[in-house]
Structures are given as structure tokens and as C-alpha cells.
Length: 155
Ligand code: FES
Image 1: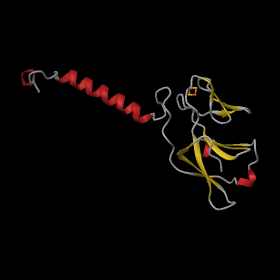
Image 2 (image 1 turned 60 degrees about the vertical axis):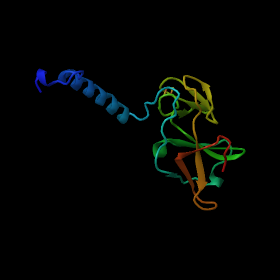
Image 3 (image 1 turned 180 degrees about the horizontal axis):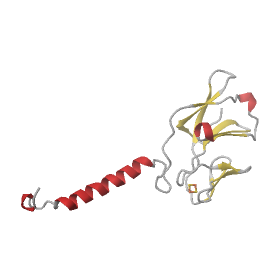
Image 4 (image 1 turned 90 degrees about the horizontal axis):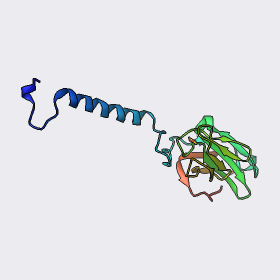
């Protein structure tokens, strides 16, 4: 295309090309880091359900099991029953760790209590509670990271 071919009001070729390349770069960056959500946005749900070897009988009140390697989650039990929390920090998507009292995020210092509520920012949103069910009565527990349940939900 020569300079004389440009339509009235159209950007000259190199400027339009630069703009399109920049736009594609931004879109590619967003697609590559889905957990790099804006502050306060919950990260997208994970995909596949996780089958654990745990059963209702194997988790006593107060116990915590770390399933971050299998599926970015923790299984916990309290007096009300068993529940699961995502390990994905709601600030920027880092993996939180069990501290013995609650959860801490190594990236920017957010802290959550054992129910996933924020006790120290910068995170503003609680950890998601995930659906837990028995595969069969008395059998192993399956956690579905794609299904968020209300915080009081227990198995
Ligand atoms: S990712 Fe920033 S505090 Fe967890």
C-alpha cells in the first residue's frame, strides 16, 4: 500500500500495524495468565474434580489435609463436618499455605482464618468453599473445584 492509497480518516499503515500488534500483545498476556486477575477478583474455577483417599471417618474435627499438588485445595473438618477450601489466594492467585491456625499467602502477605475469611489483606475476598461429596456412602471423598458452595456447607 502506498501513501496515496490510504482512505480518508484511516491511520497510515505502520501506525495501524503497531496498534494492532500492541492490542494482540495485551490479549495474549491476558490469555497466558488467567490467574493474574485484577485485585479482588476471584480466580476462575479449576477444572476436574479431585478424588481423595479421605473418608468421613478419616477426618476428625480440627484436621487439615493439603491437596494443593492434586488440585489447589485443602480438606478440613470441624465440629460441623467436612469442607474444602481452594488454596488459590483471592488477591492475585498465589497458592496459600496452612499456618497451623489459618492460611497465609507467601506472595503479598494475605491471611485467612480456617474458614477462609480474610484476616489480613491485601486480599479482600474469602477463599472459595468447594463442593465435597462421598463417591459412595462411607467411601472416598471427591472435591469439585469448579463448584463453589456457601461457607457453612458441610458433609
Ligand atoms: S496473591 Fe497477593 S496476597 Fe496472595
